[in-house]
Length: 198
Image 1 (tube, helix red, strand yellow):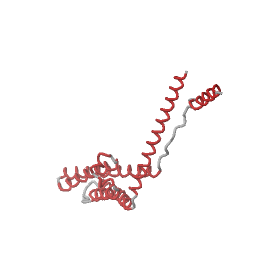
Image 2 (tube, one colour):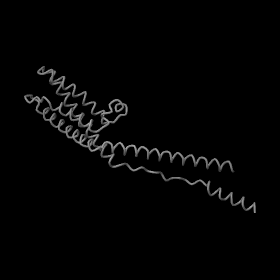
Image 3 (cartoon, helix red, strand yellow):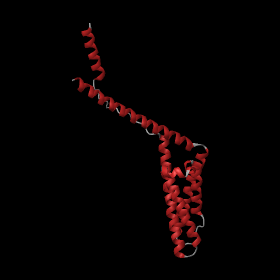
Image 4 (tube, rainbow, N blue to C red):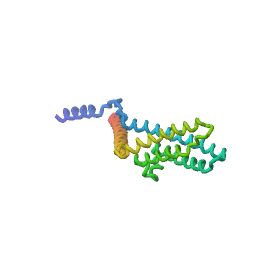
């Protein structure tokens, strides 16, 4: 009876420790809401870059003509604040740590509206460069629309929903990574057990 128990125990041990190739990889599907938020963030960053370019050209024109130095200084401030808008859209942790207000969509929207108003302010209608005035209008109204959407979304707590979903995705990805590491470790231990038994 003890011989049969040993044979049964050994065969069950082989069944349990037989290496099963785990080719199934767990996939995490991307969240469509987060993809939409990312696309809108890229659109806002590109619009802010357009505002920066327009303000740089306007500042250069103001300084070279010598017509209005204060307008040139105003445009320089618009460029700096526009860069802050672009960096805020990257959601870089280093920047967000110091400017917590930009983590909230309502605050981010107000900053974008401010840059849009600065871009639109003091248009030089008598300028020979009518294309620059049209570009100023396009850039300012586009950033104004993005800022308005951010502000309304912030009031509706969409930013909070986005942060919650990001945390869920991060924790899910970490769980999948931990599961894959455990599976790899289990296979290594099974391989060592088989080698040790042989």
